[in-house]
Length: 284
Ligand SMILES: C[S@@+](CC[C@H](N)C(=O)[O-])C[C@H]1O[C@@H](n2cnc3c(N)ncnc32)[C@H](O)[C@@H]1O
Image (cartoon, rainbow, N blue to C red; front, side, top):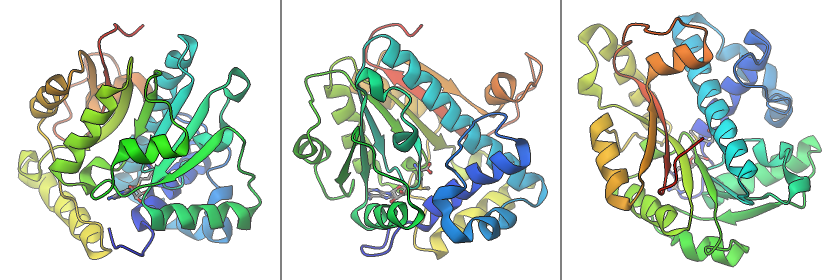
């Protein structure tokens, strides 16, 4: 990311969620604030993300990863977790909708300082109030210490926490990813949901050009993809950090779980994955 420039891919991700509300009625993921947070430019952004099957696939993936993350967070809250951390939050609206604030769920939004400043300005422009349960922490994953930054913001590393880390891993170097996972694993009873993409060489030739073009686009706006993972590689990395309970959904599993595809749907090949990892306890 550019040091002083807010993330433009964050705007794209938020735009896809807003487009999903309009085009699919929020069927996979309901986010009543997705449109509002985009401000005056919302309709133009949505229109730019509504054409063709590739954009539909991206919309549904983004909707599914948020749905999966928030469903898993709900389970964590029901077993007593009262700290949530949204890493690389961008224009994510969970903290503004926090349905568990009465139960005492605090939400820490961590983001690159430039993106976070931009979001705070946008919230005030569109009249979205910052709830008492929301705490901001401006942190650069590549150069700052996540643990120190969170502790300074009031996070208690001795109590359980649930981490949501969507749309960020591809933009970080391996060292920052490993340091972040190790930190999450150091928090007792911690759990994380994040997404990752497979290496471009995993894609069959007929799909590779489109994914290479997307990578070139994000690089062109200053947010190059730095890290991809093979599924077995990320599982090894997570186990090495101490995560024992891992659930990885590829595109086929996402289609079955959220898009009404019949069970046993053929493997749709490489693509995005959303993965949940918990320290030790079995998920229910
Ligand atoms: C594609 S956006 C995803 C935003 C949000 N999680 C979502 O799904 O809508 C990538 C996010 O990662 C953040 N990010 C990228 N590199 C970062 C870094 N080095 N430190 C902190 N945040 C970073 C950006 O500021 C941005 O918010």
